[in-house]
Length: 114
Image (cartoon, rainbow, N blue to C red; front, side, top):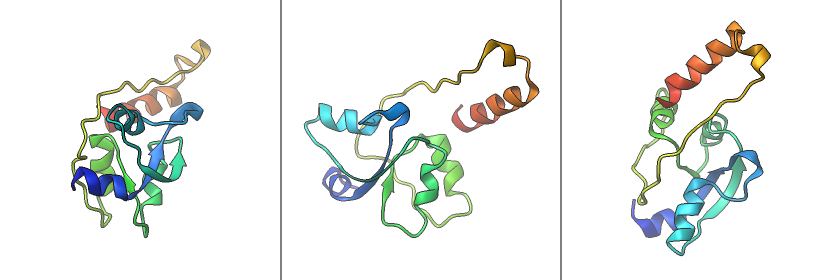
């Protein structure tokens, strides 16, 4: 997909914590461009479910994209821009540090992103 095609398509934006831009938007802004955002989601895990039956584009971390593509009729392409690495952080109260459910969840997230 060319850069021009990428900009012309309708996108799902992932912007956590109430941000007005996601990482893709920040990269595009640095290049002097914007994209058409048709829908915004706060979760990288929820956003892929909006793809089925749509013509939207969604830019995801590679590991998530590989898992989303399994069992679905989706095409995965490299983006025409360089998206920098970013860090995903999980937070919980220290009283829950030994909680088995929290430990399980952390391992699941690590499996998705590492």
